Structures are given as structure tokens and as C-alpha cells.
Amino acid sequence: MKTRTQRQPHAPGIGRRVALFVLCTLLTACGGGGSSATSSASTGAGTPASAPVSASAASPVSTPSTTSSSGTVPQSTTPNVVAVTVGPTPTSTRNMLMASVTVCVPGTTNCASVDNVQVDTGSQGLRLLASALPAGFALPAVPAGASADIAGECAVFGTGYTWGAVRSADVKLAGEVAAALPIQLIADPAVPASAPAGCTGSGLAMNSAATLRSNGILGVGPFSADCGASCVNAAVTPWYYACPASGCTASAQPLAQQVSNPVAGFATDNNGVVIDLPAVADSGASAVSGSMIFGIGSQANNALGSASVLRANSGTGYVKTTTSDGTVYSLSYLDTGSNALYFNSSTMTRCGFWYCPSSPANFDATIAGIDGVGASVSFSVTSSTTLLATGNWAFSNLAGYNASAFGWGLPFFFGRRVFTAIASQTTPAGNGPFFAF
Image (cartoon, rainbow, N blue to C red):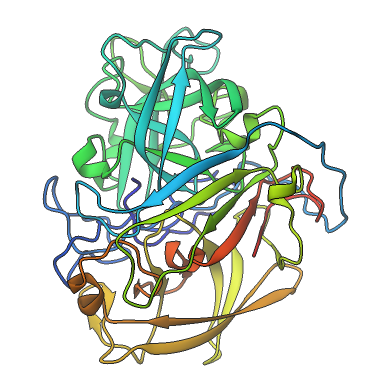
């Protein structure tokens, strides 16, 4: 899973950092403490904190224009639904949305399925632990730029990073296939075990199942590639590296060779995703099953209907949240990779990183797009100590601290159909990026 807590905003033009905010250390059954939401420090492997997990940063791959005009979407009959679940995890992390992913050697039937991959609508690209693939399963290397050297990549998630090689795979999800897609193979022995200095300053090395708290991350966010235009003509630290036998040096990377959003690589149903999860009780649920549906307006099961469309900034992926006390968060995001709601409250008691009010606290907010169109949301926050004591794994009312941004993490998705539209892709509501619910 992509362990995080809140996302760290990224400057436009630097590309989409793979983690929108702070990747927090995960929630275990212990109670309130945890790492700071904005700290790069983290607990060591095998000692997960009861801290939050925050998603990826919605940074841009380029600067696509946003339009409100409706578009014609090619219709599809391809099976487009993948089962997603929230439940017990080996690292005792709450609110982790997981799916299974199949990867194949391009153009062959030599395939491997990997389960316990965290679904993240706040980042772009598939990242799998090399150890999660069968021994001897060899995917072709993707070169760094125009060189013959294998590309290494450092993907930063707020409180940590993943380091590995870029490989090519046919990525299969339901009946959809993203052919010869560049993915990151974390801890791939083809690149040095130690990441370059430009990467290691980014916090915890999340290069094992214990530190990543999943077997990988499936980034299906609002952009097509992870770094984007910024990395095409110049090396941008800490993204891509050329890794000959003598070591790794920073490198530019063409878009076609960057780790990319699998959805954008599908032949159809390729303009976004829908996360459809049932509601959970105030005390939480021991397990939740839902659906990840590919495409927006391309089949009967992904129609926008009456959903409110919130247009995101085409350079950052952010929308705006205004709470009932008048606080305005210009950096706001909707993200399954964050395991709680993250915002700044002056009225609720904090137990470490988490909020723990003496009784449930109720709030109202408005989420608005860059065009000013908004949607009203009511939500509640229950003490983290109370929630964790239930032994449940899915919560709609878990919240933690974020000083300056509002993160609508996985709790927001329970009981809703939430759409994430990819930048520059045509939908019935116009081009992405946008969110809708």
C-alpha cells in the first residue's frame, strides 16, 4: 500500500510527485500517536506507527487545458470492473484500498498476478515490489532517455520514497490491457540497492513489503504520466536516472518511457476511473468490498449521471475546500491513497497525529473546482482511540492533522461513487482533470 498521511503539494511544472501529500506511516491497532503529517521522518520497518497514510501528490505531467464543453466518448463493451477491498493487512494498517493486478511480458502469455496492491487515485503509475513477482519472471528493461542504460526511478511520497528500475509490461485489469506500459519495479536488482543521494533525502526507503505496507501501488490519478513534460528535456531531481554498471546519474526521460497511468494506456475506457464503495457504520466495518470501474461515460456502469463535476487545476490537480468556519484550503484533493481525512482543526483534541474529540464532531464543507462550481459535504470525526479499539479496518470518520491542505482521503469515498478524470482526456463533461461525485 502506499503508506501516507497527507499529501505534500508540489509546485506546478515539477511533474506529479508520486505522492500527493504526506505518505503517512500506517495505522495500527495502537492508539493515537504517530509521525507528523508533514515530517519526512518515519517509523522503522516492522514498527508501523498509528499514524496516517497519505496519498500522492496531484502534480501535473504537463499543462493541459481544461474545458467545460462536453465531448463524445467512444463506447466500449470491454469488461471494466476490478474488485477492490478494505480489510486486515499484515501491517495492521487501516483504510487501505487494495486490488489485484496482472502483469505480462509484453506480447506474451507469460503473466503473473500480484495481490495486495494499493489503489491510489492520487498518483500515476504501477509500482510493484520485485519480490512480489515469481522468481525468474523477467520484464524487459526501459532505457534511460536515448541511452542503452536501464532507467532507474525514485518516486517520492511525502514521508518516503520507492527506488527501482523501469520495466515494460502488459498490465491487465479486468478485460482492459495497457500494452508495453512502463512500470516501476521496486528494489529491482538491476539497479544499485542504494538509491542516489538526490533520492535518499526524501525520507523512509519504502522498498520492502514491511515499509511499503503492500505489494505495490496502482496509481490511477488525474494525469497520464508520473513526472511528465518537466522530465522530457532535462534531468529533474529526484526522478529518473541512467544506471549503467558503474552507477546511476540523473537523466531526462521521454514521456513514452516514463512510468505511466495504466488507465490512460487502455485502448478504451481510458479517460478516468470510478471508485464505488458502500457506506460503513459509524463504528467502522471489519471488511468492505467495492468496485474500481474504468472509463467515464464509455459504458452504462460509468455514466456521470447527476454527479457534481469539480474541475481541478490542470497544473497541480488540486481543487478548493471551504469549511463552515470560513477556512479556505486552496490545496485540496480527493485521494484513495490517504487513509483518513486531513485538515487543520483548532477545536478538536489531537492524540499524536490523529484527532480524538471527546464526542463525535460534525462538520460541513464545500468542495469547489477552479470554475467556482462546488458541492456541499457533511462529515463527522470520531476519536481515533475509539475507532481503533473496535478492531475494525474500514472507517469513514477517521481524521488527522494537516496544517495547510484539506485531504479527502479514503473515508470520503465510503458511500459514494467518486470519479477521477484524466487530464486532456475527453469525457461527457469536458476534458479532465476533474473529480465528480
